[in-house]
Image (cartoon, rainbow, N blue to C red; front, top):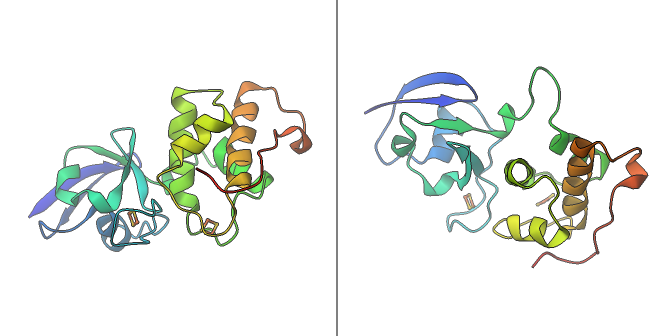
Length: 171
Ligand code: FES
Ligand code: FES
């Protein structure tokens, strides 16, 4: 079957099998390998992309279901050669170690900040609660998102001003 969708502002059409998952469509048909595939159980969340502006686990969506819709991946976060504040936050606050969970975390974080410009630590932890990080203990991820929120609000003056999240794992 043929499927057409808009991915990162560009219309794409491909011939696919009806059973193909969106995560594999993005990675294998479009070479957008920033979206990772980490499990067979819909638990890890490293595959999160946006479907019509809403974060979804792309391993739970058939590529055919995305037909006629808009998809955004981590490759589409950067605009005009400028990193998104969320991406900058992860750099500034060391929000990653191995980086495997990072694309999905960033997509969820961007969606959170788009609807809540000043989320509490609890709200951030709730937003990323469906995603697993094996490395960071989550604290630096929370801090990265807080950094991005402060950056966008114009209230951050130095990296040292980034709010500190409690150490320990996310709920
Ligand atoms: S690949 Fe693990 S939740 Fe999608
Ligand atoms: S940075 Fe390694 S899994 Fe999150």
